[in-house]
Length: 127
Length: 277
Image 1 (cartoon, each protein chain N blue to C red):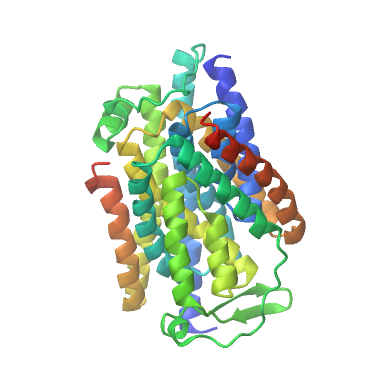
Image 2: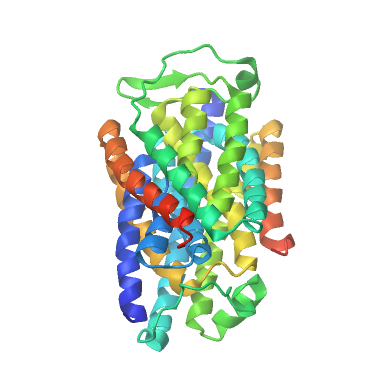
């Protein structure tokens, strides 16, 4: 097995652990949010037939964190979903570091392009 | 039906969607949107938001299992993600200018096409010469086969790259993983072995979906009460599916999934044309 293969395999094992941790954490937070949400709104009537867009406090990263700290079930769920969206972003960030450590500059560059696009979507784009 | 019952039913349906999606490498989203829109009468924009989130869960959950098996090719995935993420941003931009009916019709066509592709029998081509571009990008690799390690070469890079842009745009427009187009690009255009292409596709889907999900969150498409049962259900289903994939026979699965997808595709097109979505 070549040095590159060894490096790749190690990266893949770490990425696997990273993805599992991210998804598990996200699912746990969403689940906690669901408990609070059901306790307060479980008997209500669901209404998703007409699109009206989610309110401002469930649309931006800072507002979601603020709402979750205030124990809003919807905001806690949304925080979990944010963690889920952040998982592939973390995976790409980690891959960039791993490629750089391997001195694979072509792939470090390619990975940073992908990371830039993801960060633009999450933070810079106004939607 | 109250919120609790509604959520339980959606979680159950999503579990099944995630299971099938992971088994076929097509992602759960391809079944989630029609299920929400047709069965539960959810506005297609909320359905797309919830589906997109579930797609990230499916992809990341299943990919975590696959990377350990050594099937997915991280360089192929990362290289092609430059095409899928840019495509995803383009798809979200297009979504602003088209009606729900038009989205439903496009969705239906994509479903039928996915079914057609997944029902076709495909034989891996053994030991092709590598293209120069693939060699320079170090896309060639190996995976654990029946008799030890099997190496493969990659070709058709420009065509595969172009198809990946389309896959990304469809993902952003429809809230799906576009696994069918991704597998098409890798199987047919780039001649990557089936197990490698499906698992690498699954690996890429999460990153592609994350590119659209940020934009959709800012636009209020992601409703927590709806996304929650979808995400948890699909995730559970995909984890079970990923465990079965390694042992299962690919051909049977493709036929099974194709049947479900054809029915949903026809229904989406009908509802879109008659303006009832």
